[in-house]
Length: 305
Length: 99
Image (tube, rainbow over all chains, first blue to last red; front, side, top):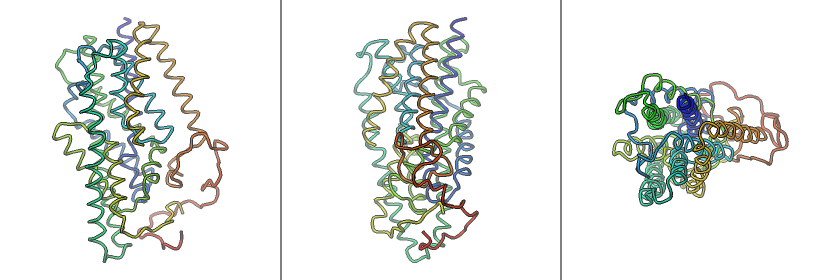
């Protein structure tokens, strides 16, 4: 009876984490198109939310390990999962308050690691795995995406330099909306999987589900809906930082950075290392600013009026 | 921002570790943890209301303020107070001088 209570609590908390994941990462896909006016804010978050849900439902296989190899999986108990989720939620909310685009996956890993250290001692954490799976990707991912975005931006401006900007801009708006949609879809697939994995693990640990089986349909649907709702609610604070705070984005840059982001995420997922969507898209946006260094900057074009 | 990236993992680990202390205490610990979570969410939400950013003003500025706002509903240079709503469906960008 008490175990069932704890399981229910953990599932609810996992869905809350999924929700914060959604609104924290909404900006990854949609900050660009909103900043340039390629999509109106409401349209953008609705589109991103729908694609998130679709992306979450597309993923049939759940992440095999939520621990990411940071420690022995046998150490994961239901209270540790609960504590880890809690740490992740609180950290997500605090960075959201400050408008900081930080990684939701890192928050989840961090929470779990902290919980394991308290529960099983610091020696149970594999330090080198943290270096190779957290520190290195956190440097490499934005760098790769940034270089890709810089080159794509340079190319986009080069190709269209003789086209009247009014014409090329309307084309780039469609391009930007499309690449942003790809990012939203990829995000739903990768991050939806994480929550499904957590819930499935808890169900297995509580003997409510035979081990080695995938998530039941209701888990897929609720996890998809939670992340979609989170995305729909916007996370406007992070959206502002990513759309305006880093560089002023123009439509060609937005299209280029979205393309670089989705290419990097999809390629890395295919190669089997999970990069942080947030790091990749932040790197792309930075890179698109670098790529435009020689391009005209239409200072003061106000999107609001 | 790089600092925030590097802080995310240890920061969440700290919260997760503290939470693990409570979570290990059985059902009362779990209930206490839920209450703390609800409290923390509420506090952060209240702080966020001091300087609201919504779909209406997301692209107006490049700063995210937390404490520096005067009132919850209007702040200095609040564009919503001056600028008429955005015209619908403009295919071509407006003249640059209009800004």
